[in-house]
Image 1 (cartoon, rainbow, N blue to C red):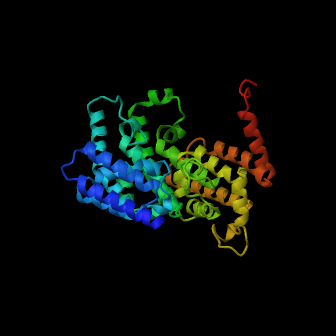
Image 2 (cartoon, helix red, strand yellow):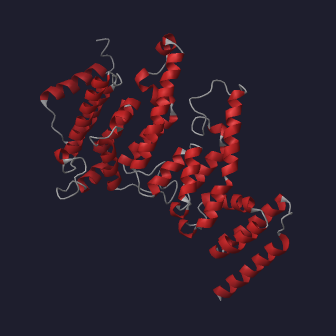
Image 3 (cartoon, rainbow, N blue to C red):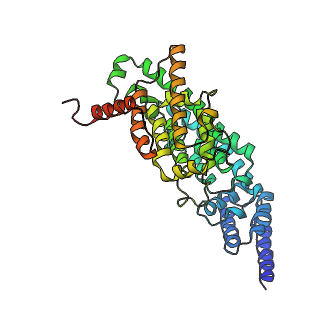
Length: 395
């Protein structure tokens, strides 16, 4: 009986669209017809009709964008299960954004050229100027609700990279189980932004820099939203939380597991890689706060414990195997020492707050991880805490 009902419904919808949806149909009429057909298919869970019959009718009539824009709210509101999404339809939706995104980018750049937006930010994109990029923000929201494996990944990565949709891009990689590529990608982009930030500060003169409300060493993190997004991603992954929000807010988001932490530690702490030093130069506060979560978060502690087998893979090298909290701690110390040596050789000092943030990291992490520090290091941490206490300067 159900099959008979579905078959009859399919015939009615197809007849309705074929007879009334024409290439010259007014857009308002096409939207009304799309709303009726899409709603009916979703209510009755006629996925093949939605993605084949209805899709083809709007495609043939030249109203593909109407179909795509009608479907989007149902996806974002969770009305279409991820398992029931169609790759061709999702690719069409992505493609429908290509031209609007290009026009929106040009309009935003012209906005500042015309002097309408005050001082131009470091970069004009949907992170730093969200009010100028409603289309980009809508696409980023949409991507969080779709089944990533059904997307045309080449198109998605190209589109998101070209238009700096970093949240969507990181989400794509995470959904595919790749947590190292987003770090490498964002570190490179953030390093360029930090250089522009420094050049801008130098161009404004030393007097302006001295009166700036933020410390110079944390200026990239405070002025560049993408830098903060990078460390937010690290922090959430180390705590085994989905990016960019919890899965209860967006059901079905990729949830990192213990292997995600292992992948990030390998990426950041490997002896022959530059990632640790680049992260340190972007923000000692962000980096060491992220590392501290490995020891202070119960879920991160359990994840490390599950990877601490002596028979497991040698993640950080023989000197730091197996992956126990103590060995992770030593690997972080070793990476910092390498960064210091390299900075001395290059004549490029590390940020002035590097030692201070490292001591805060020790104070947060060592007790929670049950790590015994040498007495000299303990005294250093205690003196730092006392010197940082309220009223210490007055005393």
